[in-house]
Length: 252
Image 1 (tube, rainbow, N blue to C red):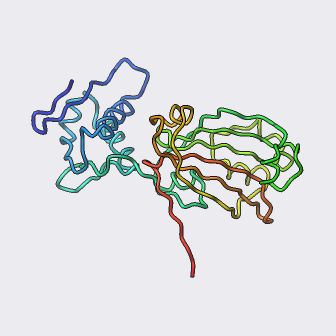
Image 2 (cartoon, rainbow, N blue to C red; image 1 turned 120 degrees about the horizontal axis):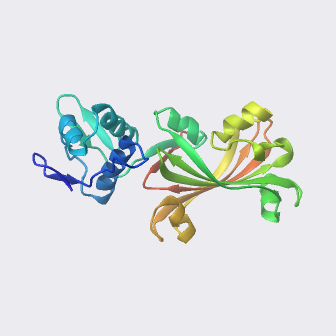
Image 3 (cartoon, rainbow, N blue to C red; image 1 turned 30 degrees about the vertical axis):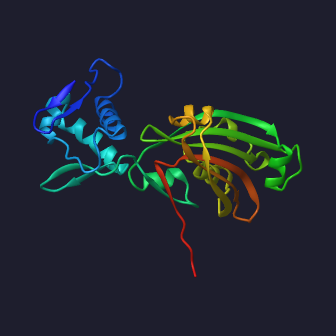
């Protein structure tokens, strides 16, 4: 284990022969220490030169790792004082009616998706009722695990009326779905209705989101409407509530 004599902080070593970039390894080491509680809120990290020496990496790689953690709200830099642990878990503020990709890009975070299902199906009775279409209507069923800076934060299950977006199943779904629908099919999400409640993670959800079975999660169920006011996406999203906070703005 590395050890900082000045701060008495230990870190596991990184693997220089690994194909994983050095800054990603350093970021993950620091993230593990933060989430485990070994680096509690308010802890002052060793200086940049000392961290570079401990991990045997360049200052540019170190700064990239620190910047990604700062983007997640985990680290806070103070001019003349150093870098402090700002929080024990990254929180992403997400307006309810704003897409994840757009919201995260606005704060400099990187969003990726792992597509677990992408298939044309017949709408079940429940899906058809939600989308206000006949049962058996063709829908595109998409399951995606959403990651922000390589951390799993949300799992989406979507049903989209297929006649509105033929060929979508053959496109790259590792991008903003809202932007893809707007650009390729002239479909724009203009509103929706969402219901949010707390649930406890089952085994599948826990494995996908890297939490423990029984941990609290946020379940958001809703419908997205197009620019004409018609529902066209039936959405179920499950969020890690330790890394998310929603913002709801009301007008008088």
